[in-house]
Structure formats: C-alpha cells, structure tokens
Length: 318
Length: 184
Image 1 (cartoon, chains in turn brown, cyan):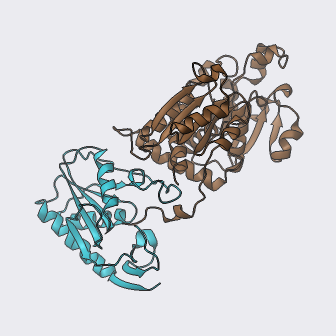
Image 2: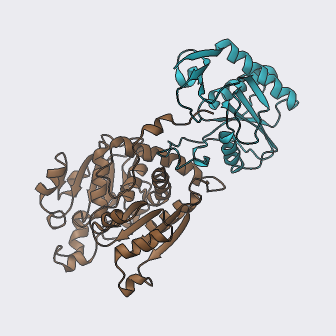
Image 3: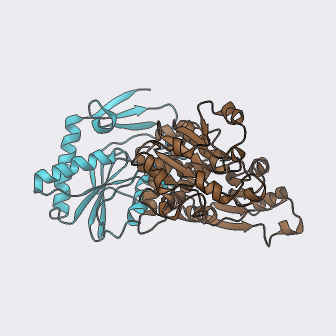
C-alpha cells in the first residue's frame, strides 16, 4: 500500500507543547491541517477513532477550569486514549506532596502524556524535566496558553480562509493574560498584523513588547484601532485588577474598552469577534455582540476539541 | 537503486476497464455500488473506475475518499506521527456494496485499517477490494476481489505507482529495488 505521508518521516518529532514560541509557521500549519481532519471525525455518528488506544493521558489541573479540561478530556477520548482527571483538591498535594513527586507518581502509574494547568508560570517546564512522556501546557500563570492560541488560529483560518496579512486586535488585560501572549506568538508567526489595545496600566511598557515583536502596534484607542480589523479578540477582565488599583472603575473600563456593536461596525464587514472565555458580559463585551452573527465564541470552544486532538496525535509518534 | 517498468499508461487504463467490467459482473450491475478510494493513489483510481463504470452502465456511482492514518496500528513505531488528510464520504454506506480501491496490496495492514475506518461510517451490505497491483507478502488474512496485475516481488523491492493526478507526468507502475527493506 502507498505510504500516506512519506514526508512525515522527515519531520521533527516534538515531545512537549509548552508555548508557541518554538513553533515554526510550518508546524502550526500542519497542526491546523490535522485539526481539519479531526473536526471531520467529530462530525461523524461515531465520534471516535482508535489512534491512541492503550495510551494514558492525565489531565493535571491545579487550577479551576471547565472548558479546557473537558475539551482535553473529550479530545483524548475521541482518540480512544485512557483519560484520567487529576485535581489538586482531594489529592496528596493537600498533604504537602511536591509537584515533582506527583509527576513521578503519575509516571509510575503509566501516564504517557500530562496535560497541565497551573497558576505558577513555568510549572509545566519544571514538570517536563522530570517526566519521560509528553507535557502539554493547558495554561500556566500569566505565561502561556498554547492550545488556546492554536484553537484561535484554527477558528480564524476556518472562517476567513487565511491568517497571513489579517489585522488582529487583541483588547483587554494584556499584561496578565497568558492567552494574549500565546496568541501573539501564534498570530505573528503566521503573518498576521497584531495590535494590542489596553489601558496603559494593563499593558506595561511598550519597549517590553517591541523587543520581541518589533512590528506590533500598541495603543489605548480602541475606537481607532478597530477600524478595518479582521479579528477583534477581547480578553476577560479580572475584577481584582480594579481592586489592585490598575483601573479607576469598571464603568470607565467598559466605556473605553468594551466590544460594542458600534465598535464592531467600524471593523471590516467580515470581522470576527472572539473571546477565550469565560466572559464578563457587560464589562469587556456587550451581550448583543457576544451572540451576534460575527461572534465565533462558541465556535472557538467547539474547535478546541479538534485542535487538541491534533496536538495529542502529533505528540504520540515515537 | 534500479527501476523496472511493469505497467505503462495503457496497461493501467486496460486494467481499470477490466476491473470495472468485473465489478459490474460480480454485482449484477452497479445499483447500490459505491467506490471508496484509499488515500492517496486509491482516490484517482476510484475516480477512474467510476468513469469506466459510467461508460459501461450509464450510471455515475458515488465516490468517497478514505484516509486511514488515524486507524493505523503502527503509530509510535515509525517515527513522527504521519500527516492526517481529510476523509470525505458524502453518501450513506449503510446497505451498500462498497468497493475499496487502492493502488498496491502488500501486507494487508492498510486494508485492515481501511475496513475499520469504513465500518465506523456505517454498515455496508458488503465490502469488496479492488487493487491495481497485488505484490504478495501478506501479513493478514486479506485478499483482493479485483486485481489489475499480480506482481511477485521480494521484500527488498518496492512498487512505485505514478498517477498523473497525484504525481504529474505519465502514468506507470515500476518495481524499484531498494537496498534496505521497506514497509509500505
């Protein structure tokens, strides 16, 4: 029989997915292409293929999450893997077991892949040093959320057919957002023109961003920067930012930085409205915009399963 | 690395026409027959068979595309996970006679994977297998219903099928001698 992808043998084998900073455009492209096939699997009557039969994936969530954990769980199960959910609450972590000890225990129990969310930036990097299998970062502190960025890229490409050359505006609490950081890596690597828009206090010094992404546009004027945008991605505003003194008031934030129908109307006619969730409707996004025809927020969630399947599959080669 | 041609474009065309006649004869027509090509080179062959069947019977049978990558049993043995391509079976296979089409039948593992994949889409009344080349060396109890040409080979040979839809140029089937054994 023909070898379906002889080119596959020459490809680099990746062991971990910790952030998108070390992904080439070609690798991202291959993952997005694989996700198209995975989406087809999810559309079948039998939404399961035997690809990862006999593999064990542990979802290790040290921080609360609904969509990401369930999305990974469904992705693993759609590929026929054994999926085990581990939460810090009720585990030996409460008795003082260290992160490395936990990882060693999971390894001894036969885990092949760890999907990890942790409130400390860098925790998955530490785990990757002590685990023989693959580690996927499902969000670490303020640092990175690579699978969210990949599903964002996938959603945009499915809807608009390309990423290169698109004007993407990311609005909100950039400074504390792991999603924004991974999206930046992903969208810029795929050739999009990214604008970050936030109050000065939620974005930090411009020089910091420009050092890594010299072509980035940084602004506090949302009305101006949404003009002709192809994608507007808004981020969740954590209310404690106001208590920390970074915002004068939520009302003021909403007035200048919320995604409203008027602002979307200034963007390109095909402009997509995105949000990684969970949303504060009426704060960073207006309820009518969240459910408008241009909103792809639910699609992002649905696409997350296909994209995570693509990643799990890709990491499963020897 | 030597290369010997065993079929040229005319041979392939004649083989496809003959297989089309055999499909008609075996199934007493093409009512309820559908073709599913196994990616990659099974797909253009399935389309050619459909055209031949249309010429014979005046009926266009539906053609689907099957990618078996997610059903392979050697993931983790052969290096990085191979690229997954789209599967597209835009018709109901329940109760139909599905003819799986591929270019080369070798160990039988691809066909086993294709059978698994196909049955995830429904329950065909029967599944038949059409291949352009049967080169032997079966590792599973699988046999083709329709064969373009039986080509006895050694394990250190490889069959290279070139079809203009996939590879460009002129159609042809070649035996390629490779120094180390390959699995296909």
